[in-house]
Image 1 (cartoon, helix red, strand yellow):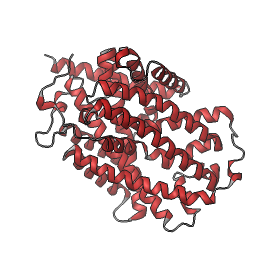
Image 2: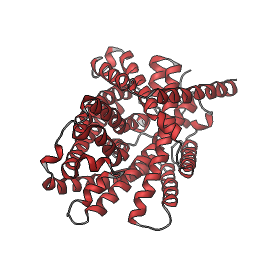
Image 3: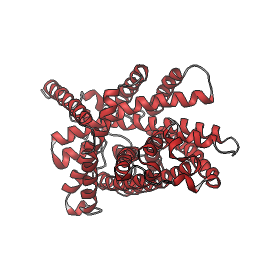
Length: 421
């Protein structure tokens, strides 16, 4: 089924290289750097730094595959679109549905995280009310146009980056060499498990591909934006993690749900704890903003092919955004915030993301040689990395992911019966 190209369903190409990089960084620099680094430290000790570099390398291979595809097929939907065009409808739908499942559940968790952090700064209302307000405000920011949302995102990301750089430069003089010993107390198994966990922290770069229909000169801008984003994220994660280990050690990192705040508390730099709490708050906002952006564009793409109700393909006449998808995304995230989170869905998120990126790499391998920017070597390495990490997942996680996928196919069958008449 070909994608309709009626003007009334088209979006505006207004995002520049700076905007695209901002969206990518906003999606990556979130719970991963503020929370997951501590969990990874507990799995591998100081050697989680090796796992971080390995995860970054695998993410870079996947990122280059995404960039190569988005440069040639600059449409909303990312891997959902590539799956349909280069593979088959089954893999295409699988990518889109898994994206929605994983990003919606993650958005709820991130919104809850924002409320917890921001309440430490300004203890008014409750963390739950603050989370609800954040979702409402970011939904409205998305509704009033991609350019406005992009500008807000750049402000949010800038604050987060400044806070993390402040931590790095404050912490360098306090680094202690003994905190890196023993370096690998849990051996290669610990490093591998930490790498698998950290990989998911890097996957936000795909948001650039999902928004490809709104990027100017996508064949040039998207590959550049993806490369800048992933390299910057790896360097930032490595710098922050190195300083965190050096200042407080991995045991203290692992014992805390907010390890960077523990690092800040160990430093005497003026206002460092407040700065890091502000940075954590804006990091959560950045991820949430990018989640709403990406999910609504996926709803748009899937509505165009009737994999979801076609009302999602509607584009606001004035603001040129998929307003129905944005409003539904905001409503679902609010429900997740009020419910606390669905642990069943969250547990399967790692499987859904690996499936999504496996399909990305397979699609990149199927591209004609004339379209391949980086040859077949990069997607082969990306696919191997995804498969290697997937076999390390618990069976329950895989089965729950397959169960959610099956639910998606049942719904898809119903939608096509209703809307393809």
